[in-house]
Amino acid sequence: MTPRLETIMPTNPSVIRWAVLGLSLGLSLGLAPVRTQAATIEVQNRDRPGVGFNDPTPVEPVGGNPGRTLGEQRMNVYRYVAGIWERAIDSPIKITVSAGWEPLDCNATGAVLGSAMPYNVWYDFPGAPVAGTWYPQALANRLSGRSLTDYYGQQDDGSGYGNVDIKTQFNINLGATGCLTGTKFYLGLDGQAGDQINFAITLLHELGHGLGFSLLTTNPSSGARFMGIPSIWEAFMYDSTVGKTWLAMEDWERSYSAMTPLKLGWSGANVAAAVPQVLTFAMLPALQVSGSGAGSAAGLKQLGLADFGPALGPTPVTGVVVRVTDQVNGTGLACTPLSSANAIQVSGRIALIDRGGCPFVQKVKNLQLAGAKAVMVADNVVEPIADMTGSDSTITIPSVRILKVDGDAIKAALLNRVRGKAAPEVLASLSAAVTGQYAGTDSAGRPLLYTPAAFSPGSSVSHWDTTLTPNMLMEPFISPNLTTTLTAPKDLTLPLLKDIGW
Image (tube, rainbow, N blue to C red; front, side):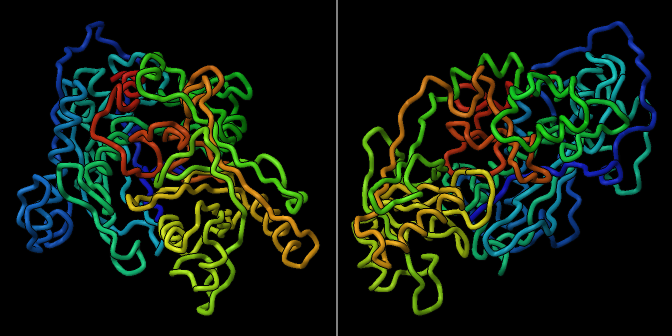
């Protein structure tokens, strides 16, 4: 299962309604805006009668949420999360949010849970700290000390939410057949989501995007800036490959940077100060393939870790590698309980299985039940290594994800052994050692932004990288160990927002 936390990012200026009318041309009142120690968030429900926040389906109270209908419980979570953000940030100007439930991208094995965006953006407004720079409306209002849509008399675009600060939407189809079938949002307020998806965490993440945790107006795929103007994010995005911030790059350089894994870091002072309190020292995972039967598959391999099961440590988990073969029902992906022949084959050994067909946790649990001591999941497409998402507290064996090229090489070695070309076994050893570098940072200690080689619209650049440890709220995938704490020692969300001006 791969539930994705995602924001909508523009692919061209027509995708989003930017606040380009009535912009100030560098005016300044010379007065510092009044600061308060809290904010007010107004949630505007745009759902139709009987839908989303208006769904009358009867439900029982759950996890501190007293709502008696599905719609009421959903809105209770929204108000609860809005309260967390109200206490975390300060603004003298009310923050308006349009909220609704709509069909979002999903299939049997993955889904977009929600998306959000600043609905209006501004540059060169009164009080703008940096000239010629786009800011999300909620932040621009705070810095200006006034509602800019009111100040400039901006009219609604006919949608009914044309002047709001943030627009959010959540997947109305989640759990329906073909959309992570059977998976539901947990609407409790106590964090006890279990195998369900915590709506409070999903919403907390999306409101973070709406407040400014996103690249905004620069298209990371092409590197092009809307109206040629950079966003406030670009001054803090430092690419260690070329030694430049995005402010100093050409369009093609920004595009290249957005698709170069593990090189784009965040250089803001507030985040830098929080990193030692929040991130742990990296555990350098290692997969060593050996044995005289390994042939060209031998050597040290890249691997991704799992959000579930025991963590790898300095004591290696070593065993004979076996490949799970096709079963009578035509599946060899461990998406169903293993046949007796396969169970005998993997028992006490390290099982090699292909990605695809079902969630990672389902594969690993079936192999655990068959007696495997560890699992290697080989990618079925060519893409950068990534961790395996999912949650199952009953999984007790380690599992890792490996590149397709490495999986293919190990399979070839195993096939040679089956054909009698090399009698000794193929062995694998899984371990991890502590390093002196914070997990998910570059060599200078800057935490990394998410830049997969296969560009991911709505996710690339506008999230923390998945290598940060522990998991952060603003990573692109939801994790079971996230909390509603936005700052050190739990998270880096609020420090980053402070870097851009909150």
